[in-house]
Length: 222
Image (cartoon, rainbow, N blue to C red; front, top):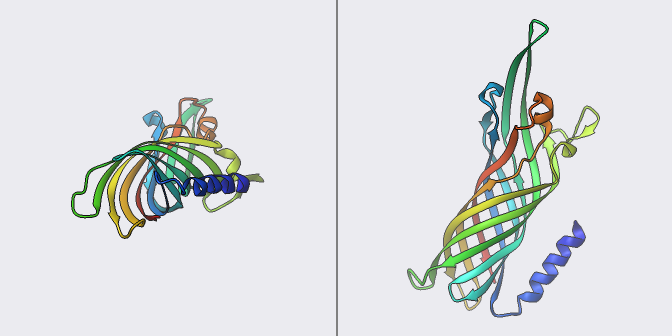
């Protein structure tokens, strides 16, 4: 993972010499939750959303005056507290399977999106809209603040890769000849199931757990 990170940063820094590339740093506080695809009988509930954090490098490649392909490399934490409870009848008696988990996942994200910029709304200020997706690789995980549960690492229960859709918008302010500040809001909607644990525990292959989050993206481009 370190080699991949160094390679991406090297490529981004190399492209920075081109006039059409803008490289920047971003801090991204995130309100993270989960959503479920499951029958009501399992009583899945989101107990609370969590404040997580993202930080990384962003790169905007302008292929026209007001249009840019946006990518980068972002380290982001996701997950929330969830619960479930399922009662079934076995051999004439009721058996209840229930649990409450505080899930925390860390990903390296590779965003792939399109940014659309307006003309100046005030001198030096542009509004932008962003649409696209993100390909994410899991790097760490805990469940109920534990890295190891029943002799097995918690990270193993989660799927390695995740894909999501991102939609957002914000403002960009020119602060100097080549320095810009930006701030925006982004919605991240997970597309892929992140955890097969509940499928196996409850015996239903149709159950899916997906990430859902809103982030406040602030940063500077050079």
